[in-house]
Image (cartoon, rainbow, N blue to C red; front, side):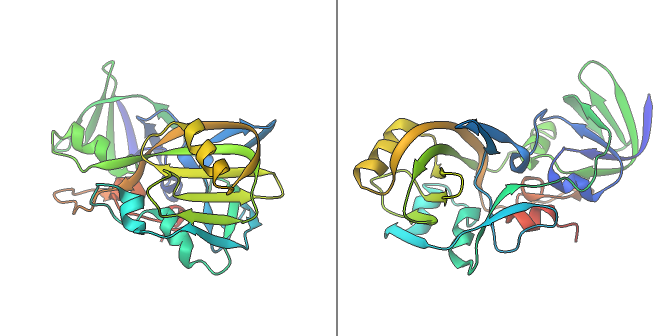
Length: 267
């Protein structure tokens, strides 16, 4: 049996706030660190907009924000989910928004990539699939709460996915919102320096149809290439977490909507 002083379940950015051994049941980097290749360039897989550029990060200033179509912003952003106000809507209040192109981890703890079979809270043990057991003194949970509740056999909160399209294309604005129902796109972030657009649409959608609609309306133009993927846990249902007697840290661990700077804060 392996013994550790602190076991951190989850390889989220918030896990960097603690020193210990990381157990990653997800097996993929946190979304802010994921990249895709578009037009021969590695860029963030999701649009990250902040008001204050995080320490050590690479950011570009965004200036011209427009609303392409008025409508009910919460209904568009959350659809039928009774969700917390999603992170892209926070950008509306930013006076000097910045697009984050690269972010660094604060700490590199040793990592175990493995699925969890069971957690024995009475004995302070985590049993992994395959039989390996880890005994801990202190447990910190930074993986999605949805994963934890399934281990505990509890009913879980709901979440909404989103489709993110990164396109080599052009637009006149730096950032735009579309609150109408005709097009699935909610937010578009434009880096004129890179010639790239990040298009975020709540739910799962056909990317080509979404792009064609934006082109027909004259919002974007000059499409050369694009990639798309679906982001899990884009919007979180409004809930109150109870009966957890160990530390939860991070957006999906606490099931609490946060901006990027809050996610990486160790306060």
